[in-house]
Image: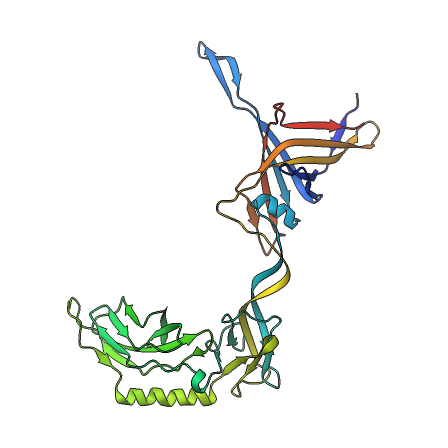
Length: 366
């Protein structure tokens, strides 16, 4: 009788059990492992095992791979592959041209573009998001009538609504603290008997950002004070300073205007040959999308696994095949990504018996 040895991971032909059609073929697994087990209980005689009772045998197939295609991922995720147009989030590092322009690779979806000038390290953001160019009737008005009422550890800020504004950005002592859709905000975790300065900016996807409001300075009350202090508004000098800053920003700010075809035109204040980074969402053609859903799980497949076995006596290779009649990937799967090693995918497939109570069938061709 011939004897054999095997040194290979199996190749897989996967069939969709619902349709009977080939789902995909894979010849790139690094390791495959089939495990069969059955729970066993014993009847004892004088405390020694005497009779064994075996439950139905269960099987598990494990596939380890560092190469994979979308069909394999779809099998594990229980997902359909959506081909065609897809949404992606892009980050592009660009250098301003002599004409002070940046050319994006794709056209951004409306309202998603953010642009930053980079520091000399080419990584850190040097300035805040560049504003879209807007003037005259197109510009968002500066928020007016900013009023602050403070207690010991909280402050309530209100202001007049701005026509065309979608959200408002709140600043405390020059640092952003909130982005809200209403014209009021409650600031918390403040220090009693401490001065704070508040400003507000209106924003809109279509019109960009307004100038900063006049600054309002307020002092929190003593610790334990139940009643709020008097409502404070901007002083006249603060209003004049805000208006002056708004005028200067309009005339000399580093801003951009998005042109057709993903062309970003920077304002005259932009330096030439400077590094910028753009973040945006866009639609691309030729996309394949897989979705991991919370309530959609892998379906059942029929799998043929084949490999070559070598006959010890002759050294000849022969064909061997395993037929798994009813296989279903487990809902849990691991997708490891590392900068040191190739991305690896570990798949575990539960093997179920067919109508003949068969889990797997091994065939060897001499």
